[in-house]
Structure formats: structure tokens, C-alpha cells
Amino acid sequence: MPCIVTNSLSKSYGSIVAVDGIDLSVNSGKIFGFLGPNGAGKTTTIKLLTTLIAPTSGTINILGMDAIRRPLDVRKKIGVVLQQPSYEPTLSVEKSLEKYGMMWNVERKTRKDRVEELLSAFDLEEIRKIKNDDLSIGQRRRVQVAREFMHDMELLFLDEPTVGLDPSARRGLLDFIKKKVKEGLTIFFTTHILNEAEYLCDEVAIINKGKIIAIDTPNELKNKFGREKTIKIRIPETKKDVQGLLIDVKDYEIDFNSGTNITIRSNDSEEVLLKILQILTANNISIENLSVMPTTLEEIFLTVVKNSNASSN
Amino acid sequence: MHPVIRLVNRNLTISLNKGFLIWQIVFPLIYIFVAGFAYTALIHSVPFGNKSLDYPAFIASGMIGFNIMNSTLISGIIIWNDRRHGMFEQILVGPFTRSHYILSNIYTIGIVGLISAALITAVGYPLFFKSVEFNFYTIPLVVFASVTGSILFGSIASIISTRLQSSEGFNVVINTAFLFFAFVSTAFYPAQGAPEPLSTAFYLNPLTYLVDVVRAGMFGNFSTFVGIEMIVLVVVALILFTISTKLLSKLEI
Ligand SMILES: Nc1ncnc2c1ncn2[C@@H]1O[C@H](COP(=O)(O)OP(=O)(O)O)[C@@H](O)[C@H]1O
Ligand SMILES: [Mg+2]
Picture 1 (cartoon, chains in turn yellow, green):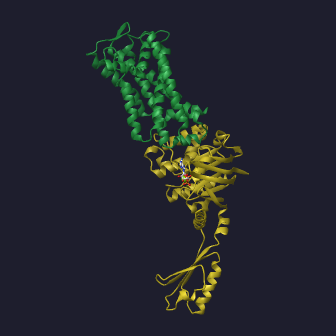
Picture 2: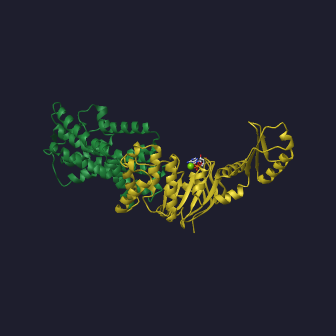
Picture 3: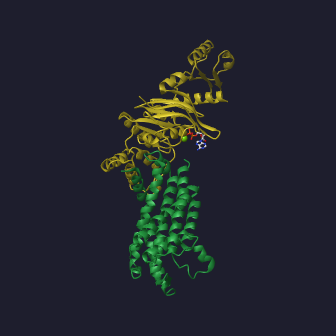
């Protein structure tokens, strides 16, 4: 069952179109990654979906409810960690978790248990008595994310939750999220860090300049856009004119920094490789090293965004 | 529990800390006892309606009004901090509406104003008990002053905190405004006897009206003039309250 559905969702600020006709359908029980470069419209989309701002046009349905007509009903069922920090400067870490649970009307006993569980899961036990004002930015971010798990929810929005976290805290958070999803939570997650999305997400959408330019599972995206493989061949120094020999071959680059390096970048890299190998053997040139670069989501992302920028200019 | 009550609970938790209690109790106490007795040598008695008060009783009753006003600063500080530290947005993506947020601030200042008034009344009582004339409108008048005064000054503090952008600006403006209210008023000295432009200035200041109403209640000195002052307080409080609610409900995210 889809728990987020939008139709031609748009938001403009004056002449800036921050979100431009987005159609989304996110299924329950999944982690949905929303990827895009800075300024792409990720935060604006989250603010629209969480009813913090009203759209210029389009429809939003969250958990079966019209989010524009029933914003409060929607907000009661979701959790939101905004990109912007938020904290109570005068409260200690444990007190701020406890009070947040109170604000969500969580029972006192449950609150107490959850505070302990979250302090340990987010590695906050050592700083539990410290005031938020005195925490580092990364610690505050951890408290902010942990705090959101004080209350029950069906759907959680996370806007770049790992920014400012060190690698171990980052991995800890991603694994905690995975655990919660196994227990039935749905997550809408924005990031500009691609391997995070690759590690975590069941489905990803790539947004650029307010428009969704690709949407699929990470694997399908790789199949679709990742046909372009990169292969590197290194040959020893030779007097032969390698460039001249390869004159008829397309989609490769050659450089002569410490030896001769040939880089193939093509949708048919295997074909290109075969041609080059034939020419090299025919001319008795041996190969020192040959390597194939695996396609990462990052490369797909860069390709897709580059293409979209090129076509919109 | 109702969402507004949960927000009030949170407001009280974040505001009622040591610093606030020192500001609200220790500071007024020093004023009442040190200034009250130090000035007794200079000011033997203060004419008040048809009777005269000794200076400690006069200043202790003035401090009730002063304390009500000061306590409303917390509404400004809460709004200001919520904007600056992202809690305003966070509350609005939670199970609350803007009206809940606004109402919770009003209740918070009302409660803190009443508590402050009660604290100073209790602490200052030994000083003015000789002059107090309890009657059936003493408590209603003091409560009226606490509530109207809280809403009036609370609205001023919210207006300042929704309009300003920088922390330096916020502190300077709010401190200047409240310093002016405190010292250009009848909280610390009577209007009679003050040189002319000053004694008129006293009556451009809502704290003067607030303090007059408190004193009328405590010292049994109700008059038509106090009645008019009450009407002025209500009207000004309503106007400021409307403006501050408008600003808060339009505050950009
Ligand atoms: N309140 C606002 N007023 C004007 N422009 C805005 C506002 N919020 C966002 N924008 C603009 O909308 C675009 C998308 O921003 P945002 O959603 O924050 O991107 P992202 O989160 O992907 O980095 C940017 O060009 C940004 O400058
Ligand atoms: Mg963003």
C-alpha cells in the first residue's frame, strides 16, 4: 500500500520554482531515498509532505489522508527530523528526550523506558546530563534524531540526518533505521551522500532543479544508467604510435603519464575493449594491467544530473 | 492531556530554571528590602489617595506590578529561542497547530504572572500588612492586574521577538523597552511630586496603570480614576494581543 502519493506537486517562491511537478508513490514498510544535489528541492519537498508549508499546486496524500485538508491528522502519525537543527538549549539530553515524549503524549512509564533505550542506541549515555547548549553539533544532531523515536509513528521523514555525524555514529544511525523498518516503520530519507542511499534504500528518486529525473531501485538504476562502464588498460612504454593505431576506435582516452594509460568509457565498453585488445596483440604490445571500475550509485547520480542539466540548458 | 497543556508544561520546564527564579525573587527582594529601607530616610511617607503609605509598603506593592511585567519577558524569550533553535518548526511538524502554540504562550505568561505576583505578595507582606485593607475586591483587582498585565506585556515581548532577526537586537530592544517601563512608572516612586514632563510620561506607561490597580486593590483605594485605568489596560492589552497573535500566525517558516 502506498503511504505517500503526490500528484504534480509544485512549490514556488516568487520566480524560484523549488519543487516542479513531482509525482511520487512510496510504499509502506520501505526506505525511500530522495537524492539530489544542494538546492535540488529535497528540503522543500519534505516541508510540503510534512504539512509545514503549503504547495503552490498539486495534491499530497499521506497515509491515506489528504495532507492539505487534514494537516494535523497527518502530523499526528508521522515523525519528522528536519535538516535544520532543533533543540531546547536549557534542557539536558535526557530531559529533552523525556519532555519530547511528554509533548507527544507518551505515557510516563513508556517514556522512561524509551529514554534509556535511545540513550544507549545513540551512544548518548555519557552525555545524558549535559545541556544541549553545551553539546557539539554532531552530538546535538544525534539527540535530535534520537528524540524523534520517543513517539510512535507510521512514517518517518529524515532530512539529511547524517550530516555532521562521524562515520561510526553514521553507521550506527543507519543500522538503527534498518531495524525500525524491519519492525514496520516506513522511512522517507533525503541525502546527498550516495553510498548511504545505496546501503539503506529499497527505492530511490533522484531530484534535480525541482524535478524528479530518475526513480527506481538502486539496482535497476544501475542496470538502466550504469551500462556505461569504465575500463582502464595500462601498457608499458613503447616506441609505437599507439594513438595512431587506435585511430578508428571510439569512446576511449589515452594519456602518457608514467607509461601509457587507455581509459574506455562507453555503453559498449566490452566491444571497445575487444577492438583495442585485437589491435594491441596484432602489434605485439603487451598489457601491464587491466581494471574494470564497478558502477556506483554515485556515478549514476553524476551522469543523470549532468544529463538533466545539459538538457534543461 | 490536551495539546495546549502539554505545550504549557514544556514552556514551564524550559523557563523555570535557576536564573529565572533569581531574576524573579532574589532581585525584587533586594529591591524591596535594600532600596525600601535605604530610601526610608529620605522618603518618610508617600501620599496615596486619602492616606499615606510608608516607602517600603509603597515599593513592595510596586514590585508586584514590576514582577508581573518581568515575568512576561519569558514569553518573548520562549518565542525567540524557539525561532532561533528550530523548535518553532519542530513543534509545527508535531501534533500541534499554530493556535495551540499561541494559546500555550498566553497560558504560560498568565501562570507565571500569577505565580510571580503571589510570590512577591507573600514575601512583601510583612512590609505592607499594616497598610493593607482587605476587602472583597482586593483579590479580584490583583488577579485582574496580573492577567491583564501579563497579556499586555507578554504581547509586547512577543511582538519584539517575532519582528527581530539578530540576537543582539533582541536583547538590546527588549532590555531597553522593559527598563523604560520599569523606571518611568509609579512602581518605584509616586507620580505626585515628580517634575512635569516626567509625571506625564508616567501615564504613557502601562506599568503605571498596572501598579495603580494593584495598589488600589491592596490598600482599599478604588476610585473612578482607577476604573478608567482598568479600561485603558484592557483596551491596550487587547490591541497588542491582536497584533502579536497576527504576527505569530503569519511568522514565516
Ligand atoms: N523560503 C524560501 N524562500 C525562497 N527560496 C527558497 C526558500 N526555500 C527554498 N528556496 C529555494 O528553493 C530551492 C530548493 O531548496 P531546498 O529544497 O532547500 O533544496 P535542497 O534541500 O535539495 O538542498 C533552492 O533554490 C532554494 O534557494
Ligand atoms: Mg536540504
